[in-house]
Image (cartoon, rainbow, N blue to C red; front, side, top):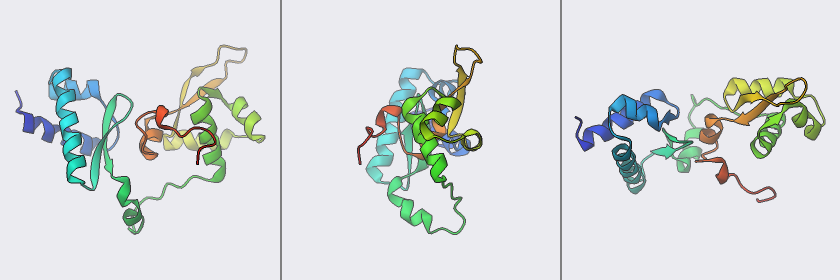
Length: 170
């Protein structure tokens, strides 16, 4: 059985190596620690990171956790030569906003709102992992439904979709 500090270190190692959201149930399986205990330990770890104001943080996202940089340092990180810039075109940002606020939504619904074809933009967002296919709408033709994914939450620093600003909010 791992000691509390060992569990914290193991959580950090798993999150660091994965580089994306790790579901809580997977952490339970990997670390062989009861869910209740692990949640408490991770909450302590998150508080420690926040208290020390480290350059990285552990964030709860969609019933899981991920390690990422603190938004306070985005200006500094932007100055790095080798940072991968993931900029969205205006069409992609518009499409992503429609999906985020209207999900689940079909391509034809997106195109109806935008007034232009969106197949290529949707394919690009899928490739970046910002959106996901969420099954089929139970209507003739069974069009694919799209939703935002955990990468969307991570990129925009959201814990859940409830953190999205209200429409019309600055």
